[in-house]
Amino acid sequence: MPIAQVSTLQESHNTIDTDSYLDDAALADMLLENAKQNGGALSGADIVFGLRNFLKMKTYPVAVKYFFSEDELADFKKKGRL
Image (cartoon, rainbow, N blue to C red; front, top):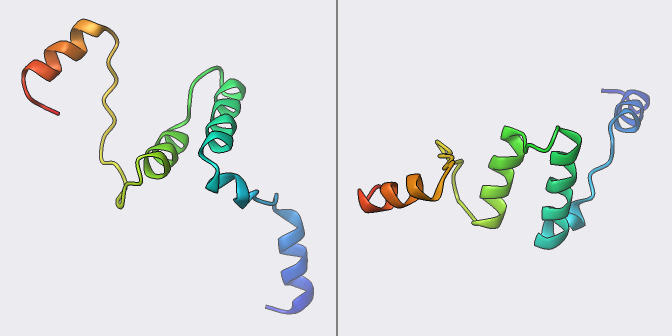
């Protein structure tokens, strides 16, 4: 790719603040801000990114289970499915 095309391509993309990825608190703030802009919900990509970075997962999560009540969580734990 010619140099002129490379610089045009780089200018058209937003820059990524990679320093924020190393600071868990700053990253959490960024993800929460994304959620505010998305009607209060984290996107699937934000959830995966958070799980991988905060839990230091080596692989992508294969599923995310949502619990809508404490009873549902307690039942899930009782059955030994964690």
